[in-house]
Length: 112
Image 1 (spheres, rainbow, N blue to C red):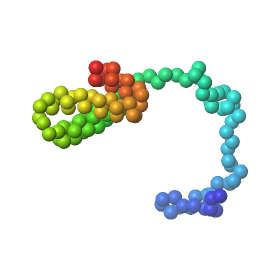
Image 2: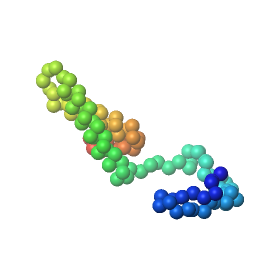
Image 3: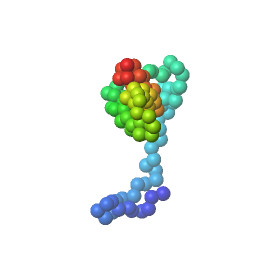
Image 4: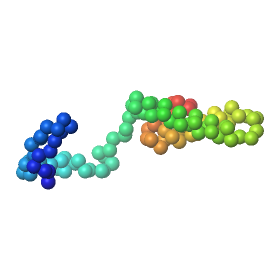
């Protein structure tokens, strides 16, 4: 229950809401299949520009992880190929952890 009056950030008094102003959810939501989890109602998620943005973040995390492993190497032979393969692996893993579509975009289009 709300106090009789509350104040906003400027200290002005705001009227309290009456308790009978609670709105009920319409009954139609459950009738129209709002909670339906059948495979027919699920649609595949299309790739969007947001997935490409998340792939950029994943590439940054992949570069950080690959560079960290490069700094702990003892031998300097073949470091560039190892860095590239670790970058691709870590970036794809980071993209897949945020969204399966992001992992697909990273694997099939960016790292291809």
